[in-house]
Amino acid sequence: MGFFAKIKQMLGIGTISVKLSVPGNVKESDGSIKGSMTLTAKSAQKVKSIEVELEESFTKGKGDDKTTKKFKLGNWTDNTAFEMTEGEVKTVEFNLPFQLLKSSNDELAESGGLMGGIGKLGKFAAGEKSEYRVIATVDVEGAKLDPNDIADIKIVK
Image (cartoon, rainbow, N blue to C red; front, side, top):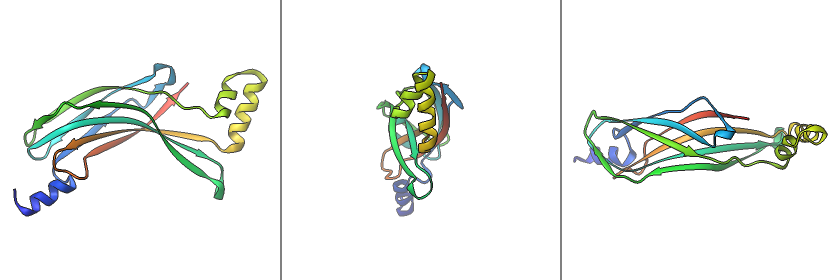
């Protein structure tokens, strides 16, 4: 392997491309996300593992008081190592279990009735908002920056 090939490998350039396929909406009651990813080898590579996770970006507040926190809600890992030849395409299916975190306003809103109305009002007043995304990362041997793909997803009641 030449000098430039080693640099490209280390940066994850020309290794493997990842294309994630997940549904646009998932019901909270399902408790898992079924999806797949397509791996395409741009050169001969050894895959050490594959990880898929569900991440929540929880935003609270408005204007200058706006804060965002990230939470990991679920994880799926396959530690089976395998090799891919140049141009080879492989599809990997997964079932990613998850459990949502709830703010006190969310819990109150779900109680229904008058208390539910107060919870919904509190959530609106606090400017609470959650966004979800699925992140698939492929651990490629010798790459410092592993290839990945990200897909936004909505979790509905």
